[in-house]
Amino acid sequence: MQVYQEDAEQWWKIYHHTAAKAKKCENFIDVTLFLRLWSGGTDGEMAEGLTTDTEEILITNSPCFFEGLLELSKVEIAAFITHYCPLTEPGLIVKALKQALENARYRHIAAQLLHETCIQATD
Image (cartoon, rainbow, N blue to C red; front, top):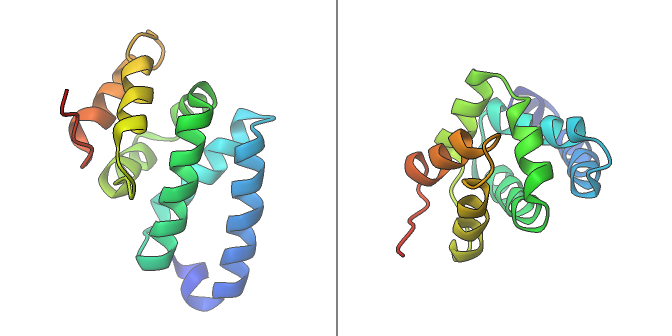
């Protein structure tokens, strides 16, 4: 957040570069670096961009999303869980998370996301 406050243009350059690499998912660390942006504190426009791109990665490439998420520290995961809330209808997100529950490697974090974020699983 400090970079954003001091130089918003630079923050957005970093953001767009990191998001583009994360979406390609050539390396899980790219997703980790992108998700790490959540731990810096988010507000308004920042949160909207992070949420939109996070949803895209989660829905289109769940394994990549979870591998990147699992490389975050416990503090960074807690920050993500605290701040992440879908902007769109959460149906596709809930579906991706429920599918992740079937994978032993992702089960614990998918369960946390289903139960500790503002995502409402209605079925």
